[in-house]
Image 1: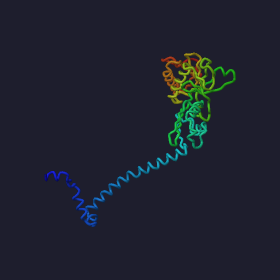
Image 2: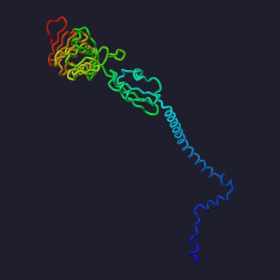
Image 3: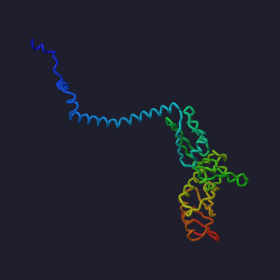
Image 4: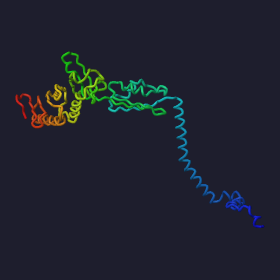
Length: 303
């Protein structure tokens, strides 16, 4: 019977005795002892470390969100980044093309139309524009690189001569002096009527016609002007045949095959001529062994 009487009595909690003792202490005994001060100081230092980390993060988030909200409310893009693949067209010129001079309102943002507008420029091969909220517009363009001037060979007789540039893909585009000053000494390739349908900006030279010319110019660019004088004119009178006129007046006969090897032979010939103090006027680099060279004031070929 006595056991059942105590069945529902609660056992004292572990902290009851401690609280009872604390309750019997005076304020001085509770808070002005060394152990309490030490524990309080440890807690304070820990809280301070947390505050040093947390407070800047909270402030950064607050001001970041505030800035984003303000920019979103204003609906404006103030920053424009620009990247040009070949550093031919400047940032200012591209902004002029797009008519972008002040802040851009997001309601006026139309990257697709802007990309098409830039891609329609005859000197630009590709353009990519995208916005990065809250306030940045990124513009990237790739310009066409002039490989050679092109001119119709038949135009020399008509007196209606005009030049365009051709890029590495056979695409024709206008010569713009303020953009292409560093390409002003590019060689001129005289086109045949069979090379393209119509001579105008935007026309495409047939691949079969332009590939050997692009390879030729690329091979020549591996040499200094002392090794191979600059190429002034390029003719292709036959499908297999290329004739070069160098800046020093020499005429070079080549074929469309093994262009790299022929340019190596041309470099050796011009180097030898310079060492001998001779000026070549006609060079045939087609033969792999003993290419033919005729020098000024000489009536016969020298091997």
